[in-house]
Image (cartoon, rainbow, N blue to C red; front, side, top):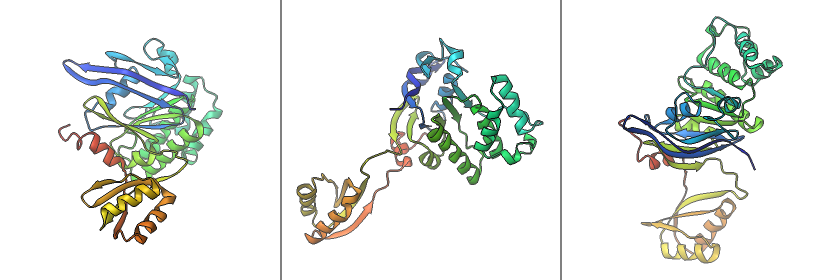
Length: 305
């Protein structure tokens, strides 16, 4: 079982009389991409700044690879790589020289530089000045900088802001490789739901300072399942067949039945209902999207944020 490398317990923060973070807890495991979602003003960036000790928390604790960030700050920070706002780099220096400078500061073997340039697909542009880089290239160089010292946890605050679709996809592919092949835990905040759905293994939805929903996105199930809607003429007969022959409990709303079943069962269920003259009108796969999760959890999002 994967180890927990970022642990937040009962974290709270107020600014004056306003409670921005209200008793939140979560765990991020190695090799996992964990999305942190919420409307503007919900407390995402405040949480990230507390993890990095850029601001103090009022209550609760944060541990990185088992080290308390308040009591064992330097040790905890050894295991973190982070990009908050713009990556820290020198525009008048080349990408390679920026990496060399950070490698010396971190006491990292310079062999790691070529590995990182390869990973973020900047090897061909490594000797160009950063001032000539596109925004997407700067973001990828920033990733290389944060990964030089082989952190256990990578923290990113809105990393796709300003990127075009090609840049977003490239960044997404790199983050998946970092997490799933190198075992780095990636904790990423974003408001782009479609991207988070493609990228993340798990998400937490934050609203008014509270975690209102957590959800597995890519569940690794031994037996794949489907949720489908059945529209039939004879609803009682269909419910009876589903229960007696397949042990499936159907949810009924008006004349629509919703069922969850093993993917391989779908053809048999449809065939049985057709043979029994239940009067099948439609079989509709039901998508369970991250957008549904988000808007249900936040009751439509915070339009006033």
